[in-house]
Image (cartoon, rainbow, N blue to C red):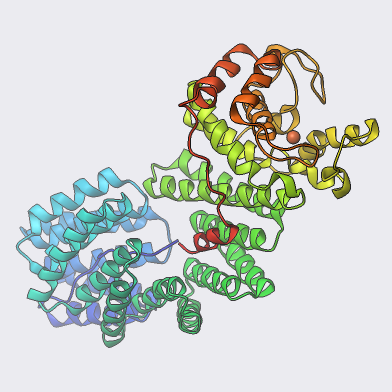
Length: 553
Ligand SMILES: [Fe+2]
């Protein structure tokens, strides 16, 4: 998980000394991460201000108390109640800016709960009510920027952040400037503008240090680590992540620590220390699970999957992805979280990287079929489109294409590469790759139904295929799609027992065997691949190294 700073609080306002002094003391505790002490001061301030009939400080103390309770993780309801009371006190006393401050906090809670529409309308109401205060205007603009950022609208987010920066500069609000620089750093990182990100995080961190804002300094250190990792500045990345870990450890922030462990795991993975990488990533997963931070847990599982993939532990990799996938599904079911959708789609990309690389590593044992999986995946997807299959079915076919021959890892090398025909025993062993494949993946749940492809891609509609001699419609459609492209690719590439056929000769041979496939599949194949002008350019086989870069966000 990455961290954006919302703006729930303001600077001190003038007022009777008792309540005002207590609020100042509370602020000092809060900035230093001593939330319990801060709460005590705010509660005392609210009581004294109430007794003195000082509505401005009563509203401020109640609001700050609400935020402190919220940050202590004491459930959203108490924080909300206190901020609503702050709002009501301010409205009754005719204090629009103070009322808007309370609305800003309430909207911030909505934002954290991923209730984005509600957050946006409350922020907008707060801006209308209290926009005359530059400090408050800056914070609300900042929060609207966070909202746009989560929704993926980087241009809108940047515009809100720039508006916030102007408002903070005009009121010399250094804490506000520190927060906005941090968030501008995050936008730059999202856009992979690493030099800008580096500059913004440094400015934010310097201002945060000058203000004694430990939490923000921790966030800067954490997010700066991502920039260093992307620029392969590993020594700086380590320093930054370890410093962030120390800050979050002192603050008792479980999700911050989990994220710092995740970055350290990524660092060790990128610098070729897999054992350390695994230890750190597992540490992150445990912390995130114990603290109930499922997004962070899922992110760390995805990074662990990439580590396993790099070290050839393909089944472990897929198990980690499956676990992350289930966490995302649960979140999507419970919350309208836009961010979850983009993270889930990144997870899907990682699945494809892992299965593609596994498919390619299987091919490397069979020197005649290099590039086969990539070609089958690309052409099978074209056939799936010609059949009118939907996006989910197309992805199923792509993933199934990469793994359709995974069972060949159990077929002896000399049989796979034997020049000349196989003996009946050898042929039976070769046929078993369909069953071995399903066995190998038995313990892995996929988001796509690929096991029928692995088991049945050598079935024939005439009932003369293997392993189950299925007929016609009994054969899963996805398996038939992979099956027909598999045959075409085998005919048009060199094999250990014969040279490649021309495209036309292969089509002629397939026309003689058209009873192997159901009619719709044969026709879709001809439309997508078979027609003289239908053949798409031969896909280049991607070097495996290319995908390493996806290990970094
Ligand atoms: Fe096969």
